[in-house]
Image (tube, rainbow, N blue to C red; front, top):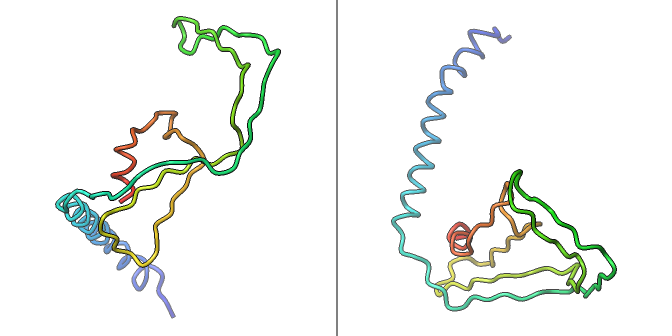
Length: 128
C-alpha cells in the first residue's frame, strides 16, 4: 500500500529540479551541436502554386483606413483580380540529403505570430 507523501510525493518532487536541469542541458547541447555544424548547402530552391482559381471583385467602395491610432490614413481598394484557394509551396533541396524520407512542413498562413513577417532566410534556417 502506498503512503501518499513518503512513498510517492516527496521523492518525485525532489527529482523535479534534477529533471529540469537535465532537460536544459540536453537542449543546450543540441543547440550547440546545431550551431557548430556547417551551413546547409542547397542544390536547388524555388516556389510554385498548386490549384486555386481567379476571382474578380468589382463595384466595392474604396475605403480610407487608419491602421495605427493617430497614423496617416491609407486608401484601400478591394476591387481587382485575386487568386484564391491555392497553396503556395516553397522547396529547399539540400546538397547532402540525410533522411530516408523528405521532410514536409506546411502552415495555414504566411505571417508569423502577431502578424510579423519572417524573412525567408530565417525560415529556411529554422526548418533544417
